[in-house]
Length: 309
Length: 181
Image (cartoon, rainbow over all chains, first blue to last red):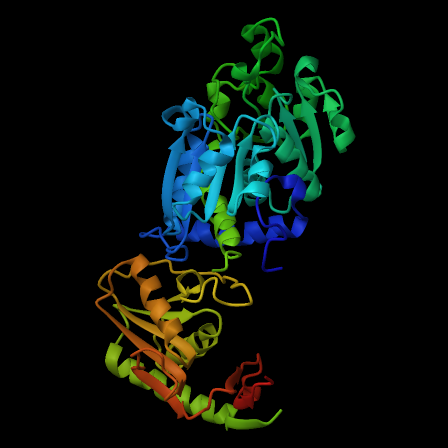
């Protein structure tokens, strides 16, 4: 396969296994590019990309911007906090105004579920979903699975546990779709109040005991506790959460095997993961960040390939 | 399909040996030279030359690399078939080095133009030369000429120069074939 089967990257749910392999293959090439003395290729020099972030982001926004610039695309950035959205402009109006400036691709993060899909139906540009509410965050799942593949080889049959605030996590849902597509075995682990009710219907298992989950897995992907999305109390105290679901070195040293520890960031040190784990040889957190640029270059490149003028 | 053989395996051998001698004449012990094969098919020429230089000329310290030009091509989004990249492997900085780009067939010159841009990502070489096995003269789109040349061929546009490399090198052949369309 040489082309993506989709016109936009809205979620992993719309992708095929072959799409992920195509992105991985291209990301391998781009990883070599970003390790050259001059980390730039001219492929997208006639493409303009708008990064629209209606929600805060550091890593994803920087990673996309860098990926686009490394491909020589022209990049414009937009944050909702500094825009006319505050003056009451609708999403379609905002985006159409931006597209009138001849933009070919839109990377969007938005607090509403389905915002990227909505946009793809109403505007004439390639859309990449950089996170829509608690729904999907496809590029994070792609960089996570790429990082696992890089560390452990073929993902088929590997055991991955996603730990923590699964309920509010778009990273969790996209990761589950991607991992199942690639043939991995997946469990989620966290306090019952933060595990969605029907999650097992996706074809995964739920484990409430952290120690058992870690014992089972090859890779632990630890999620951030998303205080900002919690309108009510989901657990009694941060201290209690850290005691029951925080991953620490004591737990890892008891396992008798070396597991890979991942975190999509930003880390709440001392809550879901302790500093000694985050900075240990188990952790591939910084590899994830590097791979984020390579995989996003691959995604932007493959979608740009479909633009005909 | 009408096939016209241009070079048989023995002739290819003679040419490669001559090209290797010309390289030695210009580059001496190759201490400041990097040989770069252009993906995908320049790699075969590079490997054959490397073997000759090592075995016949006893040059054991050759520095070589493989360069993929996909991301530097000027026909991105202008082709029916999407482009697929190959591996690039250049494990040295090319700053102030003498670079020899190696490819099998020089046609329009556009691949070489892309390779010249791609090479810049690894530093500023002191000079860049071009070695090709076959030069399809009169079909250039850009002002690019080879420094070392195996054989010049006159071919019209609906003909393709086909270079076949086999593990058993006595089967190698370069032929001119008519394109079906």
